[in-house]
Every structure is written in C-alpha cells, then in structure tokens.
Length: 258
Image 1 (cartoon, rainbow, N blue to C red):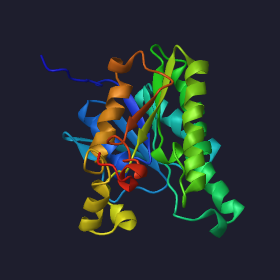
Image 2: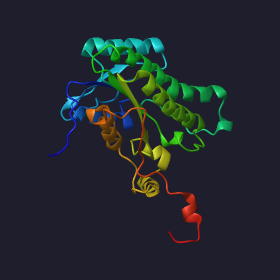
Image 3: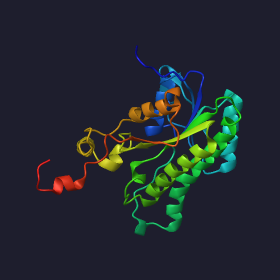
Image 4: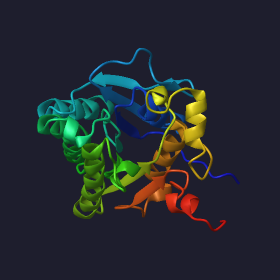
C-alpha cells in the first residue's frame, strides 16, 4: 500500500509564499489537502495554485509586530484554526561585510531572524489554545552551517534561527513541534541572478553530489512531511535537504585518486 500524507482539514501559513521556494512549499501543502494562506508585503502577479486549489494571500509586513499579530488573529477568525506555520520569508543581497554599513547588516538580521521569531510568537498564541496544538517549520539555509562570505549576516541569522527553533521546541513541547528545514541551493525564477544562464546553473548543479540544484518541490515535500503526523515525534531537529551538500575541496586538490 502506498504511503500518502493527507493534510485535509489543516490550515497552514507560509510566509513569503508567493514565489520561489515559498511558492513551492505552498503548492506542496495544497496538494496534500491543506488550506494555505500565504503572506508577503506585495501581492503576487498570479495566485499560487496546485491540484485545482488556490492559496489565499494576505498582505503583511513581517517586521511590524502589531501587523503580524493582526494577521494571525485574522487567519484564526477566518479559518477557525492554525495548524502549520512555515517561516520561509527572508533573503539578502550579496554584500561583503566591509562594503555594507552596520544598519544594512542589521536589516538582514531583522528579516531573517527577528521576523520569524515575531511570526512564531503570534502563531503560538493561536496554536496553544487549540486541541492538537500545531507545528512551526523554520526555513534555514546551509549558509547557517558554514562560512558565508558575501552573506555573513544572513548566515548568522540562519544559524540563530536553527538554535531558536531548538529552544522553542523545548519550551513549547508537547503541544507545538518546532523544526528547521535546511535547504542547499534551490533552482528558482531568480537562479540566473546567482548562477548565470542555463549552462551556469547546470555547472553549479554538478558541484552537488546528487548532480543538480534542488527544485522548490523538493523543499515543499520535506515541509509536508514535517507538518504531518508522520513526523509526530520529530521536534527540535534540523532536516538537511541539500543533495548531500558540497564535495570537500581538499578531495579535488589531493594527488591521490578518490
């Protein structure tokens, strides 16, 4: 018998769920049967759809705590519950530390660490009052597990996000599970800005042991698992979705064949 995950009847919020990885997560949740609400500062050019169903969009500035609290109150009032929060919104421009001001680096930390904390606190106020609690999924990054030149503040924020999730998992147990999903490089509509044309994307993909960049659906499928009862005993964990990571550079520099 095939194993399927059915999230019908559950309500999920995906921050930054209108494009790229966030849209892939939203689509995967829709395909699993969840009611999905996405949020960002600006509405998407076209709705996020999958399996004949459409994610709802509500605008919110995740850096405004009052607006975030109002957003989650509205989700609860409109949908009756909140089962899943995926903290996906984030990002950073490429900027070496010596080329940016402290204020610029602080804004990166605010978006990638403080905003997920703000959203999680507001979601917890809903989840802790309902039978069955809920689950929070942080979207981390391999940048938080290794040096991240050109995006140091982003890497620091993602490292902090992972630690934050582990503490939340302890404080909010057993009612609310909290985990971090740690993607590697993902192919999105913005990949050309980082890796160049199709040849460049393919070349970068070959540096990954599995031979390609992740697709947004790969990240989405992992989120569906963490959101489901199949992961009922998983909390405070970090799930690496990075195609086996990066081949160590010393292997290519060594004179011994491997």
